[in-house]
Image (cartoon, rainbow, N blue to C red; front, side, top):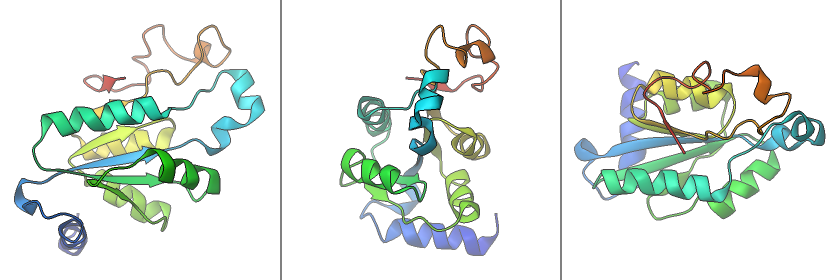
Length: 165
């Protein structure tokens, strides 16, 4: 990561918290719902993360770290933005402005840790961040056509060491 990008991220986070930046653990959250809610995808077996998953994941990091800040990203899809505004909340949560996929990926990949829902964008951001990752483990409905695309234990999709909720 270039020094300019790193300085911008540090500057941004310090503007959104009174916690010491050098002790701050930044957790990137990527939420994808949008096209996964199409009736054809639901019929195929796609599932999306709910509010309970998001809250459990956020609380995991809140209990693990004294100084934590969450950067919550989603797509430009208006229903995703509304869902995030309603369900991803807290004084330690910054709902990030949608800019471009490249900038979003860059910032998410430079976070200390990750919370991901479904889709490859969040997966790659978490892999690049290389911290603790919480993933939504119910991406495919049991006994669905989509579920048959994965191994029985889903280890062909989720990276070893990641934590499924």
